[in-house]
Image 1 (cartoon, helix red, strand yellow):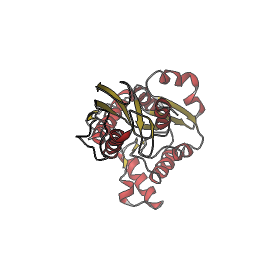
Image 2 (cartoon, rainbow, N blue to C red; image 1 turned 60 degrees about the vertical axis):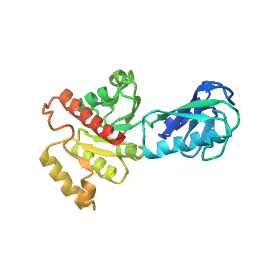
Image 3 (cartoon, rainbow, N blue to C red; image 1 turned 120 degrees about the vertical axis):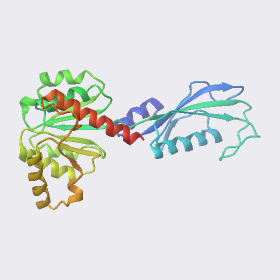
Image 4 (cartoon, rainbow, N blue to C red; image 1 turned 90 degrees about the vertical axis):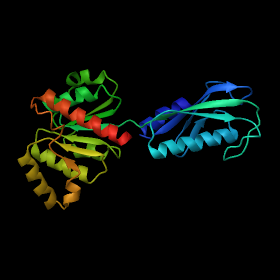
Length: 266
């Protein structure tokens, strides 16, 4: 597998990686400018020259992954016996600079309920580089004609007609952002209960204060304690955006998620 195939595979598996590119060469170097390699937590593909300096590149790439850093970084190595890396020296006689670019795993946003509000949220999310999972138990809510405008943006969109939508929820990757806004309160409750038994980064439930109080009571009856239930955000969206039309709610939700994502990036 070459480095480009590795990028595709890692994205499909929601794994963060680092793309290392030999950006500049002075003097002798074991590879030509533009040589690339991809480094994941456990593996690597391609090469920027091998030897001790490549081992240093791999170490630093994995440090970037472990710390969650998202900015690019340029590393420069003198390939002579006077300057050693932690792995030793390399005596090609030149100097190389390697650009490290973190390829973050795409976030997964799962919208359960493709009514008016869900559809408007999906319209915004479809323009972002995310994996967008759209699910509804009603076949007319996810027809190909209705979903077609959502396929034109950057998002990788998957659409599900699921009479038991919690089955789709169980297939989501760890760290997904889940929005629950179906047409049926009983379905919402099932999805919330299922979400609490998984490992999402965010669970958002649309609804009024009274609806949320009823849900809290039912979730306690299902065995969830207060700390677990507090993982659910209800109502959803920025509270400072008070419009109740579907487009305004969608803007409030998208803005809230964007703020949360930026805080995760540090």
